[in-house]
Image 1 (cartoon, rainbow, N blue to C red):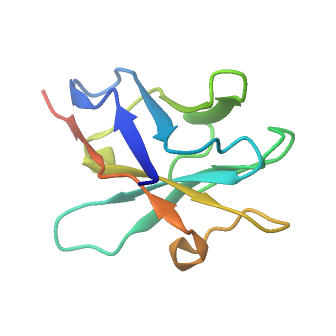
Image 2 (image 1 turned 120 degrees about the vertical axis):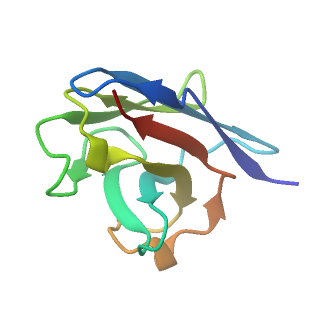
Length: 124
């Protein structure tokens, strides 16, 4: 069964940093565009960042631009989300997702594969 597995979540103080990782099992995702989304309680799933299959193109949600960085290592079949200068409003469950096709997307409905999510809590 194909799935994505996120890791690296946890509790961090405001202003701190975390790095999330996403590693698939069951197949390689080196030809897929990858995205990170998050969902806080009572809120809709929100686009965080996306990266093209080659790593040459990236996109960020307005609320994280300048603070978060998405990257990938296709040799390790892993995607990363480096989160710096974190704020309490970054608290959410973070999901990794993959899609094929020509472009990455901000629309979570366009992604085909999802992980189970990892909790990130920003609090003092």
